[in-house]
Image 1 (cartoon, rainbow, N blue to C red):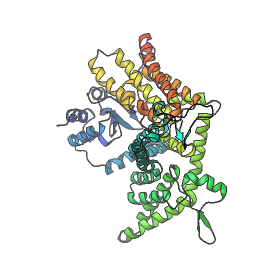
Image 2 (tube, rainbow, N blue to C red; image 1 turned 60 degrees about the horizontal axis):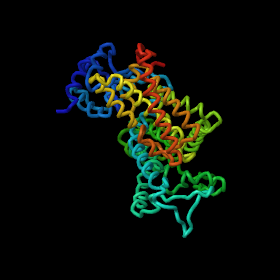
Image 3 (spheres, rainbow, N blue to C red; image 1 turned 45 degrees about the vertical axis):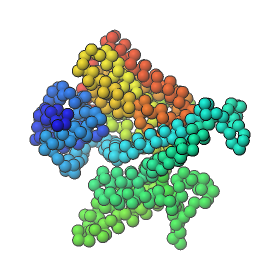
Length: 500
């Protein structure tokens, strides 16, 4: 018997029974309900359940925070409630989302496109982080680097030490081999995006995969080589006699893939409505895929690339400009509120674009530090309530989860509920962000948030990032205890129902 069957049964009763569920699904940490009558949900009783870390309502969805085992809980809930299937529920959830404004709809779409590919991005981040240690971290005990009999030194005369791959054929082989999945995840990211768009739109997913492959085909000039080739006038072209099309790939590009995927899906939906079913198997895929590929390489790809480059340029200017410290302070402090609204999902696209355009991202390190700050604020609550066994059952797992990069249980189950630890975490994260942008801390890739995030940081910034982590650990923890003792915001409760 599953550990969650009893709580799933209780949740079904407390939420108003099966008849009160218009739709139900789950994300990485939360059960998401569209309730026919939200007033029937007994929120207090739900939050008393051992498996539940907290609840809140956002954009018409009643969300119950379970934690990392939400998929297991969801399976048990389906079993006891009899609510099965996904397609009908997704349609109902989509209907409920019509109450959202255009910004919420755009962010929801972006979130639902990236959600299925985030596990791959996290794996890729771990791989690149490990490769970073193997090939990018000089270690003095491995000796000075020798090239053709000459000891290598930096411009200031200091020795350049070997990395692990310089002295170990085995680890050099491992490092080379790991680039196989690393390249597949990041350089071929458009394939995952176009697949995810078609999945979200309910159209033919294999066509999305094929479309994505046409954006990164080896026949095309690699996107990373495109700027130099364009400057030299050496871009290969398809020659149609009276016009030509540049053969440029879109490796690691986000917006071109999203635009292309949407074009494919809209074309398929259009043709399915207008082509008789008896011949649709032949003509719908052809009339959808081929025009989508043409549009991707003539209009949508270049436009998406230009928009993505513009956005990443603005963010990069904020990260590196004369008031970068202010950018870091504001972004570091406000990232957690972005998580509340759902707007944080847009950072995945921006991070990816920054990595593609500038070889690294200064945004993601602040996200990892924000996760740490939330965990540390929860640890402050744990310390203050450590003799309360029931409270510890919520605080300790929530803190561990946040230290490993998943903050929803910590935020919705602890920090937002008490308010003052949430403010303490914002302050600590803001100060850590200030340091991050002041010294230019950069990550090679998106990785696992929280404490393991240091693996994704470029080696020359490890010391600074460790200091930023210390700030994100100490400041929220200390401020949480100070705020609790002084009564600052201690009597406030947040009625968390986000509206726009």
